[in-house]
Length: 198
Image (tube, rainbow, N blue to C red; front, side, top):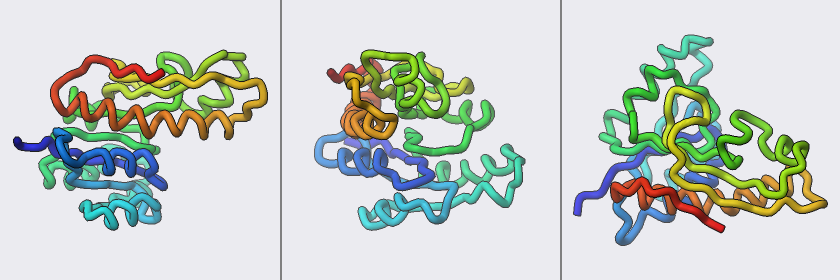
């Protein structure tokens, strides 16, 4: 069986990336081909290298607001490795429609809220401020609209009375590490039926 090749984009420690790498073994239909970061100091790069996965860095800073020029460089290592699927895992740069359209129906992102609620940042604080009884995370296909696109999976956690944004984030992260690998496995096998974790 020929495995799908997966490129993972990170900006930081890459905890979701690690859970994806660890899942792509055995009978999994995909294998990692690249971990790519916009930040040379991203902790996840060393973790990827230790796992034997090729890494690359395209620093966004020299491009000073020229997103197209940055993305023209960012796309090169992805194409060079022949990635079939691109997974955003804590990649903190907003991508243009021009970039996203090159990977239409092949790019996934994980977002720490139950979309369509709380697109953008500070999702845990916003869920607490709204008095929500439950919160969670979503894996979705990436489209040109931020945190939009078809939902491929969701996991839910109860919001507790004593929760702070940090305690809530920590519980959601546990679910992210379960949800993202489950969605990728299904997606890589050609199945877009949404995954629902309790």
